[in-house]
Amino acid sequence: MAKQPQKQPQIHEKTMSNFDKTTSTSEVFSVASEQLLTELTPEQAAVIEGGAFLIVDALQAITAGADGFPSGNDDTYITVNGQRLGGEIGFTTGQRSDIGLGAAFGNSARVELFDADSGFNGKDDNLGGFTVTGGPTTGQAITRVSGSGSTYDVYYRVV
Ligand SMILES: [Ca+2]
Ligand SMILES: [Ca+2]
Image: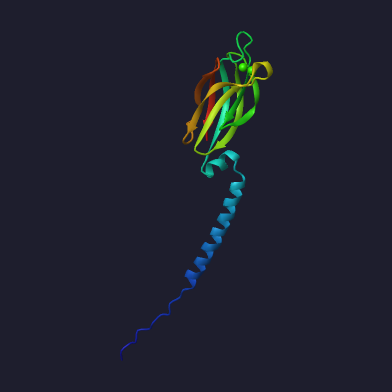
């Protein structure tokens, strides 16, 4: 009397239930990601969108001479890609002032300083500038600019 081998029925239920679990887990994860995005600062959002963010931390007047000597009190303001960044700040030679303002940019950021003039003094004087390209700076960078009788150190970061 030969024994007949018995076929065991194949069961797929376990595989199906694992698949369902994976689906619900990924839905929870995508909700969490959206909540994270709303908590980003504008700086972080700019970086995620493929651009960068320039922050001007401070200016120091090495020489404030754009309104002539000895009256020398520059009325200094900053532009980034032609857009004005904040108001005028009065600078005397040697003075350092915190700025703490920034702007998002794409490929490059042209930073320029001006001395505001009006009336008899004519149009604003350009105090020089520089162009920032590429990725984040490692910590703070300093670039010296000069023009119209003034020289400034610009303290900035790209994040
Ligand atoms: Ca001037
Ligand atoms: Ca002026």
